[in-house]
Length: 481
Image 1 (cartoon, rainbow, N blue to C red):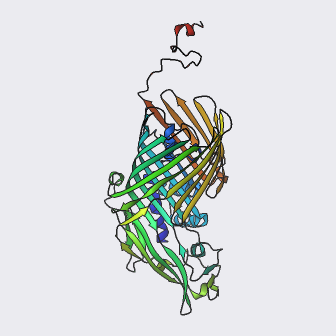
Image 2 (cartoon, rainbow, N blue to C red):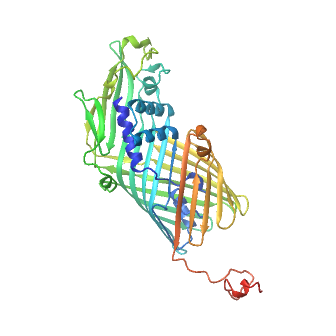
Image 3 (tube, rainbow, N blue to C red):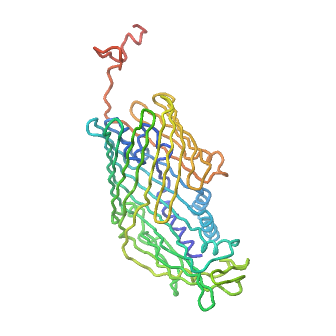
């Protein structure tokens, strides 16, 4: 089916352009001193106590996270090898329908610069690439078309096909400040440069007209992508190809689609053991003005009488031998091209967490993340335990529910040394150990450096109040006291 191929080629284009990019993992939310935790809550910038911090591609933060990993992995593998077929496109599309909510996000930090002043607060300048894909194609109309075992569709009941893909570059400046010994606040102002987007407002519906049954499609699929869509003489979607003038450099340096956004967050210490926090991330929108090639669906397909098993005033049941693989349903994909500019809000993410200090070296944490976007909601929660092996090394592990994936074991390591820190972790250890039972996969890693750090000459010894003792004294090395 042409529309399936167009949809999946669009997905493949965005995934391969930014493949390997990452987000800060959810389980690092409560890791104290983690240099990139401010991506999740700008108030966490206050944990940055080094005067200057610096990180740059490819060490600034990389990884990827998505559910239903086997669907995407198989599609990408065949696409890269050039062995993908129409049957593969159909299978992936049908799998996405059966999956229900599909969510995938990738980021890559190109540059991070941090500055801390005890009197003023903590600042962070960041440049990153981000891509996000969220969709839910499951419903009465789509299941009736794609699933042979789903036999009945109800009339006069429209199904919305929410789907959003966006790729953009972000320039942002964050600021965190400790207001008092209990409250910390943070804000991050963002400037977006959109690279590509797809937003679906399409709908499908079954209707009865003059005793006949019809399947209809309506509404726009807003597109800003370097693709050429081909229509035949009947304005049916007939194919898609990469635009003739497309090249990776122009795509990545596109600055015509501007947007603004903001992150807000706070952290409040209830007592010496309990801290609560919350944030809202990517509260903003992008105005799309380049590579405009939206499609307005105006399709209709008369359902053949020979495939009607049963019918009524508000429903239609099909026979088992009806299949979109053998029947021509292209009439559903009559479209009009549209080049009107449009503005779209970004998927907004909400975090809420609580951390309990069990002992000086062990802490317990819970965090809930909700991604909300025009009829699409993706909720995740993580229970973690953080263990300080020593002053330099922290281990985080626990249990997570990520969307509809209920068997996720996060594991992360944070190592701090004299001139920086390095982190490595996975949202789901079982995706590597037992991939057959895991629906979600994610990995994240990165390194940050402390610049211009002054050499510490003196030991901090509490029982010597009248002078400071030099570090690394010769007599100490000899064992003298």
